[in-house]
Image 1 (spheres, rainbow, N blue to C red):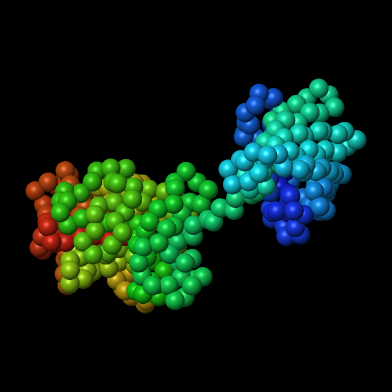
Image 2 (tube, helix red, strand yellow):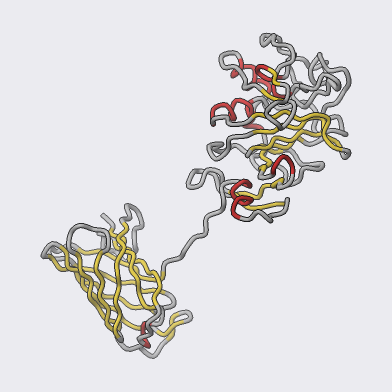
Amino acid sequence: MMNKITAILVASISCGASASAQWELFSDTNLNGVLESSNAHVQKLDMTVLSNTFSATDLVATESILIQGEFEHPNTFELGSGTVQRVQFTISKDGRRFYYLGQGSSQEGYQGTWYGPNNDSGDFTLGPKVNVVKAPVSCAQILSENPEAASGVYSIDPDGEGVHDSFDAYCDMDTDEGGWTLIGTYARTEPGGKERISEYNPLPGVTATDPATGLYQGSLSAFRDIREQVACDFAGCKSTAYQSSLNEAELDMIRYTWGYKDQQEKQATTPLPDCRTRYVANGTTYTNCLINPDRNNMNVIGWQRDVHTSHHACWLGHGLYFPAAQGSARCSYNAHANGTRWGLLWVR
């Protein structure tokens, strides 16, 4: 099993400086000259350095652990940006002592071999800890931490340590109290709709004006509010639907409406969340976001349906189930992705 020890060491060890920095010790149990980085365990240590010697005690572990060692005088050749020097230290734990011997530099880190009391051994590395700056999970977090943040493109990571990497997203910091993350964009030049949300480019467009088609596929657990704008053109969007305080499953249901087969299958067993025509809580509310509650009628678009009766503008969800219709058969004019209109999906 690998042992990973996080220690506080002096940054300029060879000269005995008193400034401290966080370092890490990685060790495995297979002595082959290659550190195997699986099964890591972290221990935080309070490191004390005097000249070229150091000692440390564990701040977290209940068992008694002591590390003692020294950095020897530099050799005459260079390693990267630092002069090579040897490091040797011992770790005492539960009456047993482990010996570590390696070489490297305080700038580039050290590597070597360790030996235990029961003929056990392995490889190790010791070096400065690299602090990874985590991307914010949402535009709302960015705005909360910096109320002066302007609308624009920011790097976010909604699922944190999940399988999806951080990506660039457009943040609307001005409309409806701001903090909106653009997760869905449907281009005006791509008529027809998608059968499945998995058919989308997983990276949404990074502008709310004439965007490329894309739909974020990762976790929505960082969000609670949703805003969908339909039949958008360069003069603005014809209509907007809102809902607040939704759970992840409800947000996911709305995202599935961006694939018309996904929508039909999901909506057959689970109602769509209600929606409002205005951002304020007293805006007109439509059950399941449908003007006509006939959920078995496949011409009804659901969250893609325009809830503003004065426009009857349809969005982009028309597809093979009604290929002759421009959007839904309930549309009064062709406000779909016909080269002039696009759609946007926001969460917060």
